[in-house]
Every structure is written in C-alpha cells, then in structure tokens.
Image 1: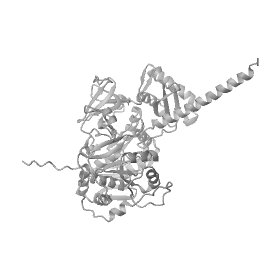
Image 2 (image 1 turned 45 degrees about the horizontal axis):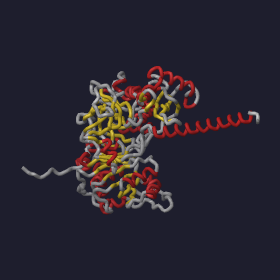
Image 3 (image 1 turned 180 degrees about the vertical axis):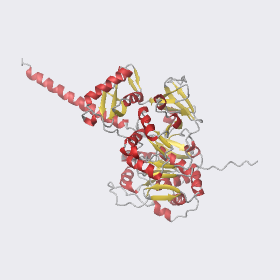
Image 4 (image 1 turned 135 degrees about the vertical axis):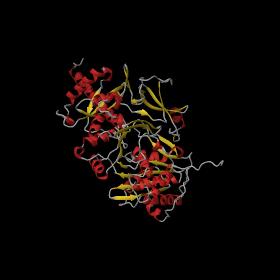
Amino acid sequence: MSNTAPTFRSYVEDILEALTDAPEREALVHDERRISAGELTGLVHRMARALAALGVTRGQTVTLLSGNLPETVAARYAAGLLGCRVNHLYNKLSAESQAAIVRDVETRALIVDPRLAERAAAVVAQAPVEAVLTLGPVATEPATPAGAAAPGADLLELAADQPADPFPSQARPEDVAVIRHTGGTTGHPKGICTTYGQGRWFRHSTLDLESAHRQLVCTTLAHAAGMMADATLTGGGTVVLHDDFDPAAVLATIERERITQMFTLPPLLYRMMDHPDAAHTDTSSLRNLVYGGCQSSPARIADAIRRFGPVLVQGYGQNEAGGISVLTAEDHDPDRPDRLRSAGRVLPDVEVAIRDESGRDLPHGEHGEVCVRSAHIMAGYWKQPELTAEVLRDGWLHTGDIGFLDADGYLTIVDRLKDMIVVVGGHVYTTELEDLLNSHPRVLQSAVFGVRDADRMERVHAVVVPAPGSETEGAAGFDGAAAERELRDMVREQRGAMYEPARISFMATLPLTDAGKPDKKELRRLAEAEQEREQGREGQENQEVQEGQRELTPAH
C-alpha cells in the first residue's frame, strides 16, 4: 500500500478539465460573442502565465473590478491556478468603499474592465496597487484624479504572447481562494475567506447544477450567479452573460437562447414577471429559476409560480456558511403560503440548531438564532480574529438570522438580528410585517426597518411600492394619507398596535444594493434625513411662535 498522499485538485482544475474534455462546445456567450470551451481554457492558461511573469504568485491577492465579461471569468480562473486570493468588487460601491477593500485585502494586482477605467483610476488614487491591468484596450483616455496613474498594461495583450499549454496549479488546500465581502446592508462590508480545500462550493446543494445547463447570468458574477456559473461549466453547459439586469432583455434571452437555469433576487424576479413581455414570452425551457439573497413575499412567489410554472427553487445560505437549505420546486405550492414563507429543508450535509441568547437549543416552532455546522463554513473574516471568534464558536457559525424549524424539518427565517426592531412591548420582525403589507392587493413590495427618534428609541418605518394599476390618485399612484390609514388599520387589526409603523411612505421602486437586495441602509438614511428636516421645521415653527408671543406680550 502506498503512503503517498493524494494529489490535491482545486475547483479551478475541475472546471478546466471539464472544458478540455469538449473543447468545441460553446462555453460563454456575451452579446454577439460566442466562446468555445477550448478558447476559454487557452485564455486561462495564457493569463496565468502573464500574471506569473509580472511577479504575481501564490498567496497574493488579485482583485477584480469588472462587469460580467468572458475575460472576467478567465481572469478569476487564472488567478486560481496561481493559488491567489481572488476578491471581486461590487461595481456599484462608492470609489471610497472600493479603495478601502482594495487596501484591506492587500491587493497585488487589480484587474479592470476597460469600461471601468475611470473608476479604477479613482480607486488606485486612494489605494495604490503594484499592478493595474485591463481586460482589453481602454476606448478613451479616462479622466484621472490629480496625481493618479491611469490603468496600466492590457492583460489580454500580455497573455497573447504566452503559450496556451496547461499551467500547473499552484494552489494548496489551506490557501485562501476567495475573499467575498458582505453586501454592506447592515454595516461595513466584512471579508469572508473560503479556502481552496473548501472550494467545491457549487456541489453543496440539492440542485442538479452540474447537468449541461444553459445558464443566464444577469446579476453580478461576484455573487451567487458566479458560483452557479462554475457548476454550469463543470457540467458541460453554457453560460450566457448579461452586463446588468433588464427584465425585457432577460425574457428575450430566455426564449432565444433556450435558457434552462438562472439565479435572481426576489425584487428582480418581481420585475421580470410584471413586465408586459412576460405574458407572451416562451419560458418553457426553464428548469431551475433559482431565487434567494433576501426575503421574498409568499404572495408574489405564488404569482411567479403561476407565471413561469413549477420551476422556482429558493436557496438559503450565507457567504459565511455556504448553502444551508433549499425549498425545491415540488415544495412551491401556490396554495401553501406557509410553505412558501419557509426557506425549505436543511441540506443533507448541514446541521442547523435554533438557539436562544444563552446558547440553549430551542424546540420546534420557537424563534431563535440560526446556528450552522458544516464543512463549508468560512475559514474566518479577513484580518478580523475578534469578529471571527464572535460568530464561530465550538465549530458552529452563528448566522445572525432569527428563525425556527417546524416539525417537518422546514426552516423559516424571520429576520436578521440587526434588522429586528426592539419596541415597547417586544420585538417587531421586519419580514413578518413585510409579508403582511405585501398581502394587500394594492401593494407590490415593501421594506420595513427601524429608525431612531430624537430620544434614540427605535420606531418602525415602512416603505411601500404600489401595485401597478392602483385606482387611487396622488404620488406613485396612491393617495398617501388614505392609503397609509388603510395599511395602518390592516396592520393593527391583524398584528396589533406593536407592529403598526410609526411612518409609512411610498416609492415607485426600492433602491437596491449591487447584489440586487433592497437597500435598507439607504432607506434608513433617507428616513433619518427626512426626520431631521422635519425636526428642523418644527424647531423653526416653535421659534416663530415664541417670537410672536413675545411681540404680543405687553412690556412692563
């Protein structure tokens, strides 16, 4: 018997092997470009050599500032062959936030989408990087801040001079493969580290991800769609890339390209099914319409099932934990809102415990923090050992989500610990209130969050998006005062005075984060700004009243 340890294979090697097995098959589609598996494989190996020639080595960080380009996919795999840490920035973060991340993760090489050259210059002006490379020529000279250098060499041009034969992987199982940052909706983004040894994250699911799917990527490759793309390419499928989410373009592509699988977030799913083209677009090719990333409305998901058929699948997980549970297509019964409200059954290789503040396991039906144990839990937060120790205890990840398990093993997420609003009399779970508001026939979508008043007490605020065709007048299709009274009455009657919002406002659409989630941080900022303006107006009015009273008071 040999005592030789088995050779380690990274997830990148698995993907490249699958691409090499059928080099003529179509691997990536972007606009009019169709790239074969062989072309993609060759580009990955040439890029790896070009990066190595620049001195980029195992254990360093390669940061991507790029949209959904085929070259983005290749650059990610090339950095993976080198055993680098890959960090993919969300494009819609501010330059200041991006620069803070670039600096924090100790970026050795910043790889830039040519369309983002101006933003890259603004970033490196604040966080200088040794190598700044573009994925192709920059069309026009970017306006750069004073003293900043424009993005440098064209990585594709450098790669063209390199051979395309296989570049041997340098990755080791203990090396950090990916640093993913939280969306920042509940505070400053945190870097979440996953190792190459954990890297087959896309196999951690009950979904049939590795069949020869035709996957549409219409959300950022930095999020869940990118992990699903890894699975699609490993399974012999094709990935169709969109630069951004546009419901009309998504529907047209599903029909034209015979898309079988895609990932989206609930707010984007609603826009897709509400679009006029949805009624006459052939979406029969879809087998997995996967949604997740934020809470969904059972009433709206029921509408989506009726629109697209029994193909909806909900995935629940976290970057820190990997996949946790799945609500399968079979579980999506439009007549079972209680089931649609759940996040599905816990995955077979995952343990979930619901615990109270003292760490005691709670019985079925009781609300507590969702704690997870599996082989896919993060290695830790990048350079934040204290924060890592807070959430990783005795092998269990404390997710910060509040939920419960029912007797059938279905997990329901009620709220984030940080989003739960503490009010006089108890706790308001924001998702429960959102579900109730969304059940009103004239409400399309809602977001609930807490705002502290002048006394630093949290008050419940709700922002409501009206349903199309509301027959009332006023801003955004509503008579604000009457609609607010109607919604308040409904909440008070069905959930009690504790859940009644201190304020309900109306918007045509909710602001979204780069990952496509409702941006409650921005909504809270807008609400606080309006609150300050109102307090200023009240102060001015009080001052005017006092001055008027002084004028009317006889002098002694």
